[in-house]
Length: 201
Image (cartoon, rainbow, N blue to C red; front, side):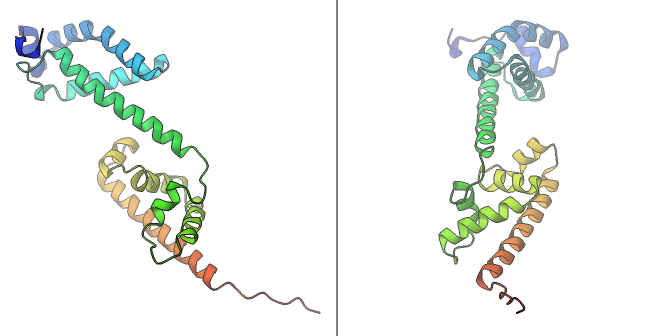
């Protein structure tokens, strides 16, 4: 049956209203196919699959008022949510794998964070940035890499960390300020090294 042939039944019409009986029936009918779809896409363990499936149903329940039963069957609507959630999970897993690699001078991390320091020699800037990033606290490093390397928005960071966007903005500002201070200090040390003291004869 094509989407143009779809005629919503009474149960589908009750879903946007949050009808408990309609949701129970929809869950019972959809959980098996959805579980199999998620597991086939993620190839993950049972616990991870169950977590993603639960997140999909939670998002569906939260956004049910925006579902228009006249446009598509509820199963198609649910699979649309699943595609976005699965893509988000896979992207997050890729980012975590990339971030788990040891930070090396000259890699994309250092190059990205070195962009503001255009007046410096690029090679020196990358090496200096890598050294400064390694000096940051773990949370500061995570915030900066997620923001400027992974390209996450403040809203996405807030969702990942369980904080408000305002709190994330403040934490990012503090991390940027600290990074700038450490970078400037390292730059001054490199350009004006302390004179060596001669040993007493």
